[in-house]
Image 1 (tube, helix red, strand yellow):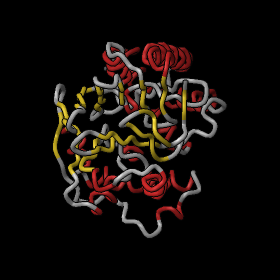
Image 2: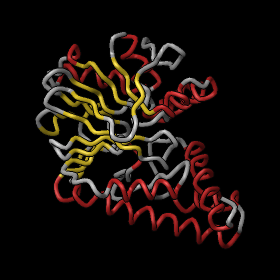
Image 3: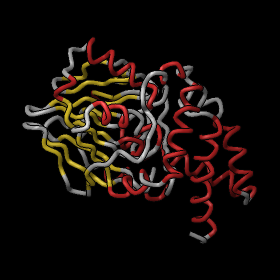
Image 4: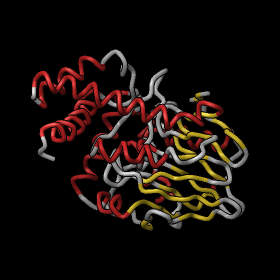
Length: 301
């Protein structure tokens, strides 16, 4: 079963934010952690939800960034400046990206563009949400874990959506936090987003399929529970294979990356209507994916 509603999922776990962009609050005996950084414009929603759901913000000692794309790091600067002792975790590659001026400018620009698409620009007023050079934290690798006290979060490296992608898993709850390394439960479909390296993305899905998931906690469009959660990664594998074949079929006709991007934008427009990202950002993502897949087909990558 899929849910986009903010609120308590089960003991120790809450979904916060909104449908287009959510974060998770995981509460251990010693402290709580926010998993995923979301879009910057959900900060007012999250603050209201702390009050509505009786969440003690003072117990939040950690934030886990699962990858460094703009729509997954947005609330980090605000909360880090609000609480300088907050511990921020990300992959080493993510910290490298977040130290690049060009990447930071892109994060801030895309955050504004997406807020405009969601009619949420007013939400950005009065909050210091921009990424600058004052945010740092700890690096995580495959096999690392974060202990919240009676609640241990295991870390997996799952590249492909981005070069810096991590996933998190809580064995005590069989809760999987794949970020966009897993399929995205949009409407009645599963969106496969192997942005940087589609082949690695598919391998990461195979890796995630080895985990038992009672809760599939996506960053976009909510979470999945019950029998659907148990099969969601396998279905994401099928969706990724199907989407790749679709790209290959279009590219085979034109042998042009640009023409394939244009045709895929036309073909996918009905399916991705109302999707969180602006059209020009989606077009850029398709360009990355198609370039990689075309390179594999042509033997150039």
